[in-house]
Structure formats: C-alpha cells, structure tokens
Image (cartoon, rainbow, N blue to C red):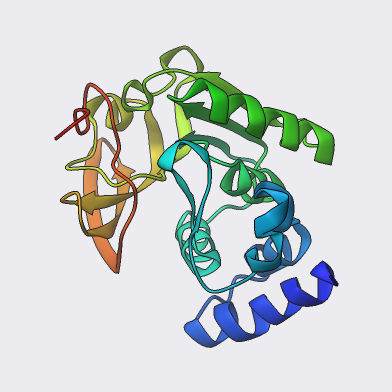
Length: 215
C-alpha cells in the first residue's frame, strides 16, 4: 500500500476541512508513519477516520483527535511535554516532532514496551517512557511546559496540575466514563483558566487520581 499517499489523503480530507491549520501539526501528521503503530493486519485501516483497537483493550485515537489535541497544546519546539497514556506510542511520536522532549507514562507494561520498541526503531531519541500510575505524573522530571492526558478523566488529577509550569498548558478529556469534552487548562501567575473544546470518547484514565478498575 502507498502509505505516504494515504497520509496525504488523511490530512487533506480529515484534518484541514475540520479546521486544523497549524502547519507544524499538519507536517507532523504527514510525516509520522501511523501504520507502524498498529498490528500489521490493521495497517490498511491506519489512516481511516476512526480510532482503532490495540492490545490490552486500549485504542489508538482517531487522526483528527490526535491533531486537534496536538494543535491545542500550541507547541513551538522548545517545550518539555508530559504525556499520560503512551498506548501505541503514536501521539508521543507526533509530540516528539514538535517539542524538545517528551516524557510519557503508561500503566500497562506490555504497551509501554511495544511503544518503546516502535519509537526506537523509527529513530526517536527525545521520547522517554516509564511504567507507572499516570495520574501521579512524573514528579522527578517536573515541571512540564505542556501536559496531555490521552484517557478520559473524571477530573484533572491534582498532581498533574502541580507539575505544570508557569504559562503551561494542560489538555485532557474530562467527563464520565462514556463521554468527555476536551478541557484546556492554562496556568498564568499561579491562576488556572479553563477552556472547553470538542466532545470526545476515550478509554478511562485508571489510577489513584482517576477512575478505579471496575468502576
């Protein structure tokens, strides 16, 4: 399959018509080989307008959702980014194209291991992954200029707010387990402001400051 042509088609038909306009984000979506982040039998669907299942009952988000979340982070190139929920590693790869360093926390060891292998094979050197409860963040590496949560949260975990730097942006899907809305949190002079964006559906954020297993 001509995956490069499929990426171009994805950008032209799914992203630009829906208002994604940041050239750096569009270029990253054009560059990163999304098909390498799903199992081979699913690769023909990698650039379709949908989320796809990966191992451990998790998902790789719809391309548009990855693009809009990335655009809302307003990355300029010198940021230190914390990602909660590595999953397949695709979102981390997009972030790595646009920021200086990406620190990604994944609670499921098998997913973290596979993502690390993929990212290393592709050539990313500015992504750091650890297995832990993502709702606790990565305190020893804080503060972070940007924080992105790629799972649905009942609320923003307090430890993550505390790890956000001055003038930092935190982005998360917030709501109940069945539906959420993207919340953009900005910290200015210690004061938090909130913006709400598109509706969405993510797998639940499991952890001490998220949903409990079985809830």
